[in-house]
Every structure is written in structure tokens, then in C-alpha cells.
Amino acid sequence: MRVNETFTSLQGEGHFTGTPAFFFRLSGCNLRCPFCDTNHQPYKEMSEEDIIAEARRQKPRHIVITGGEPALQLTKSFIDKLHEAGFFIQVETNGTLPLPEGIDWVTCSPKGKPVLEKVDELKVLYSGADTDLSIADRIKAREYRLQPLDTGDEMQNRIILRDTIAYVMEHPCWSLSLQTHKLLGIK
Image (tube, rainbow, N blue to C red):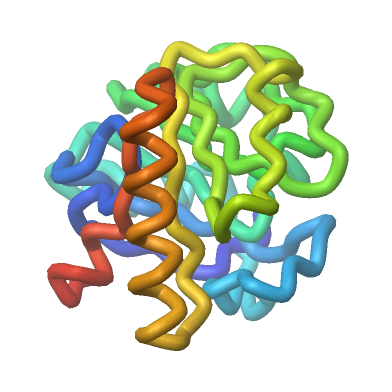
């Protein structure tokens, strides 16, 4: 597998915010989003066994597989091996490709034309009133979250945060998701 990086930290977003986790970032993506804040192109080749061995050396039993787009490389056999090793598996995806069965928690931040119809957590990046939230009609989820888009401009980010909070307050089926890892200054 093409692995961009691995690290242990607290999950900074969504349902599992604050949960210690082993992060496994896969290289590559099928989209080129202009707001992407992750350099996921560099990689080193690792076998499934090498990845599992590295994960076992970490204390968290919660593993977050992210990218880029993890669906480009994930297989059911790898998911099964992670379960056999005792891991709870969370995958963060853009939703444009099918995922293998057996994942414990799917967080979808939809971009492009999603093919997923049901996920555990739908996380939409909110940039203001022009944000298309009709995606919630097409992708069913246990939880719906709005995350203010980080533009890199502090003033614009404050406006987007204010607008996101206002929207959530008016539409309580959504909840606010912040990138707490950035607020805490951790990876």
C-alpha cells in the first residue's frame, strides 16, 4: 500500500473528537480540491502486515484511515486483518468510490459526485449560504455535521464560523464540527 504517513494523536474532528487514535494516511486522491489542507502525494510502500505491526506498537485501538482518498487502496482483506488484530476502524472518505464491507465507522466529507448512499457521519465543509446542503437528501447518516471551511484567511474564517454556527442554530439536525487538533496545535 502507498502510505503517506502514520502517527498517533487525538481525533480532532467529528463524532470521535478527543479519542486517542492511530492515524494511517494513504497517499493519493481521485479529486483535486482547491481547499485541501493535506499534502497526501508523497508515500512509502508498506505491506498490510507492516502497517498492522506498526499499529500494534501504538496504544490506541482506534485506527483512522484517511488520505487523500482511502477507497483507492482499501480492501476487505485488510479491514478483516485489522479487526483480527483488535482494532476499531474509522475511515474518512470523500464518498466518490465504494468502500469495502466491515468498516466500523464511515465519515464522509462529500466532494465530487458521491456514490455512497449511507454512512455513519456526514461532514460537510461549510463556506456560507451558497454551500449545497442538499447532499443530506442523497446520503443518509446517523449524524450530520457542518465544519467551517478553513480558507487560510483569519478574517474570512471568523465570518464562516459565525455563519456556520448561525446555520446550525436554525437547523438542529446539523451539529458543529471544529478542527480541534488545529486549535490545540497537535497533528
